[in-house]
Length: 259
Image (cartoon, rainbow, N blue to C red; front, side):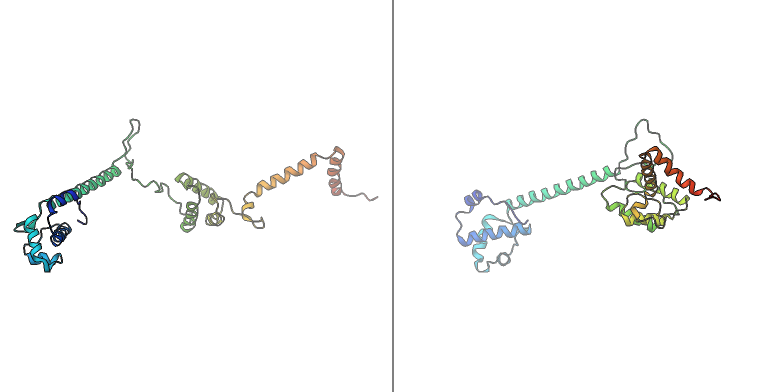
């Protein structure tokens, strides 16, 4: 024990008659008793050496005989023995409570989830447990997807704000499968998304199509340009539209010999 309860009233009522040396000896003997959690050695000279009072053997012996009981194991103090037993009992109780708590947590993690009444049991069904790894992938990566490219994309997605769920991964693999059937290099597709920090996968850009992010919407830009051109044509007067159409047609017609 590194500390013990000190009752000033009890000590004063039992030890107020001690002189300074005897009081010091009593306090040091109690400290030694609690610290070692065992009786004081029967040899008084040894006891004096342990508490640093070799020159005061007579006073130490007086205190031992008044407040301690000599036994085969040494000088025993009844109050100190009770305090030590109480202290050890609290430690044992705390240890048992800790082990019981750990055992309950272990049992809770290994207890299967109760099946609902309308949930069928199949031969290939695996029991779900509370500690089952929910991040374990329940899908397989096709062989045409390089492992290093997929791993790089996966790690990039995990570092983002969104959660890369199994559902999201399955959809990504479905898109890659479609691109692979269309002749796309899925490794480059994944690397493109990884390099740009994209959450999804997109077909590779064509040469001369500009930078990466705008290449994804190349078809959309073409449709927008056509719509703007049509809007400009609709804003013209009817005769301007006729001239705009007639002029390029006339350029295609063969010229007469008189021209």
